[in-house]
Image (tube, rainbow over all chains, first blue to last red; front, side, top):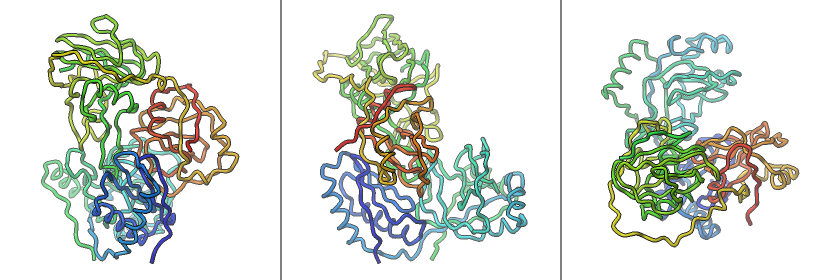
Length: 242
Length: 281
């Protein structure tokens, strides 16, 4: 089944395709399938293809001379690409220490939500999240799938210095701060895993469409893992998620 | 090697930017006024992606340790070489120990210093453009040394290309309708094109905020792709024009989109300068 798509010129060098404006995994699959076929088809001069929840931005390396013919080319490519169902994806398991030392807002968050800390941790770490896209900061994942019981508006006063690796909840989203940064999310834990490393040829190992699950670790395990990561003794590897 | 005796107000190394990592959330960066930057590189016969120094508002003081040839383009900052005035947009021959000095910007806001074959600073993810958390250094500091290849000028080259300096003092920004333009009321659309706006103090390589605010009751949109030159309208009615270091996605309605040349024009504007939008087509 097909979605109604809107093709528009974004600027001289790019075209934006929009799907219905909702967060939906089937839409994401359709977007990523099309993204792949644009990249495979190797349209000359396409230098970047970026997706969000409901958009695909195609950036060319120079001015598009004839936007209308380029759009009709993309439209036929979309028909060719069809709607192949992705049957499997990668699952990343991310260690998080929910200790009060790291989850500085966990206590207040649990009270606010009238749940025990254990219940918050269980709800947060049992869900399997979908990476919709990466944006906002280098290596910041937009995750879908946070349990409704954990939805809570952002803090009215942002915290000026949230530490790199902090795991937080803001509104309907959960996420990981890839670097020290100000932010208004409720911080419930911290991961020692690097989400962005500019010095690596693969600066962020995660892709849109991947799955992610958190699992709790103790403070000792956190510190050991942090040391291993520092010494390059740890590599995050994904599992197959059918 | 170029020795930084004074860094100026805010100076960075820039090239065409970091292409290919926006789907990992990495901004594209690159010279704010690409027209001037590319002009300076073209004068020198450099590759398009040769790295140069971008100075903002107040220039720096630099000492060259090897012979080379340079070009200065963009905002006029009264450049002097060993205390003698030198021309912008012309080739300047450099001898070892020459000292190049820039003052405050008199016309425009950003000046480019290009050297033959470019500065050989750290390349990260395919670009030398400085950006916090991506490159080791996010700004040029006094005492830094930037490498370049020594170059002996053998023949004098003439350039027939003329630098168009009208863009240094222009406030007219050519725009396309933004992706979310149709969310605007007729009144808002009319205001966008009839009002004269001024650049607020909040202007940087990431974004320029404009004053005054517009009446607005638009809700945020689902986070969507944005590009340099995207004009966003916040729930509070502030117009924000994203620039080269902008985030890759945003959640405010995208009401207008600057043309590439309008981005270069805006890059030469600063606080209190007035601007207006002109719809293309």
